[in-house]
Length: 110
Image 1 (cartoon, rainbow, N blue to C red):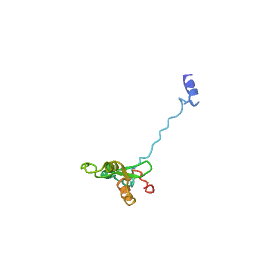
Image 2 (tube, one colour):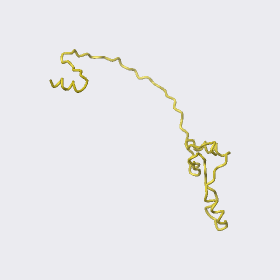
Image 3 (cartoon, helix red, strand yellow):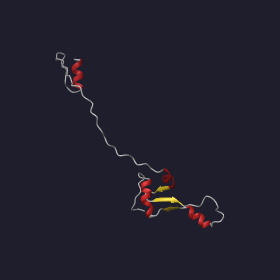
Image 4 (tube, rainbow, N blue to C red):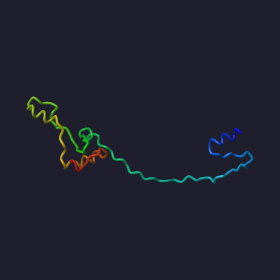
């Protein structure tokens, strides 16, 4: 009765205690060497990644040079302009893509 109540809850199959036991002998499996060619990952050039940034639209922007010291000689407007980022020129976009392959640079946006 306990076996029937257990079977009725699951699949309805009741294993018979009189059923013959079968042993299945599997043939030994030989290990087969499988070669998988994986393309190498491209490395990001860290020097370029630290100097350039990619915007949400895929443009590559960088910082102006020449604002670290000797700022007394510069006009306020010049210092303010050097604080802003600039979009790199079209000729340097392929180099930036090679240096930062996984950064999502959009060549058409630049």
